[in-house]
Length: 236
Image (cartoon, rainbow, N blue to C red; front, side, top):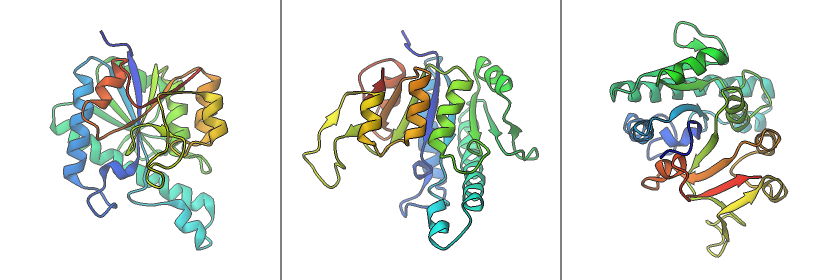
C-alpha cells in the first residue's frame, strides 16, 4: 500500500543534461520521464520542480558583476526550458502532464495557480512547476518546499546524484558517514549541501518530511513513495 498520496519531486537541472554536463539531452529527459511514469503507476499524485544548473548558474553571472536579480530571473526562465522538455517526454509516454510557471508566459504554459495545480493532481496529471518562486534571491530548493506546502504534499523528494546525506563530501572522503535519518535541526546545524537552509527551515516549520536520494539508483523513487527505507530522511 502506498504510504504517500501526493509528492513534490525536486530535480536538479543536471538530471536532464547530456554527457558534457550541460544543455538538455532528449534521451536523458526520457530516462527521467520513465522514472516519473513508474511512480505514477502507484496512483501517487506527482508535482515536479526543476532547477536550471544545466543551462545557467547565477553565480557565474555574479562573478562577472551581473546584478543578482537579473541573474536569478535568467535562472527562472531556464527552469521553464527544462520543464517543457520533461513535459514533452512524459506526454509522449502517455502521461498527462501540465506545465505551470510562476512567471506568466501564457503561450507556452499555464500560470501557476495553487487550486488549479491541485485540481490537475486530483485528475491524475503530473504538474511541472517552472519559474522558481517567481522572485529573485530564492533557490529552486526553496521553491520546491514552498510549492509542496501550497499543494499539501505529504513528502518532498530531493533527487540528486548521491544516495543520501553524508557527514562529508563522499567524493573527497570515501570514509564519510551516510545518515539514514536526520532531524531538521541536525541538518541545519550540519549545513548539508544537498538542500539550502531556507528550504529545510520551511519544511521544519510545516512538519514536511524530506527524502534525499539518488535519482539514478534503480527503484529509489518507488521505494521513497512507498515509504520504504531509501536515502536519507530529514524529519522531526
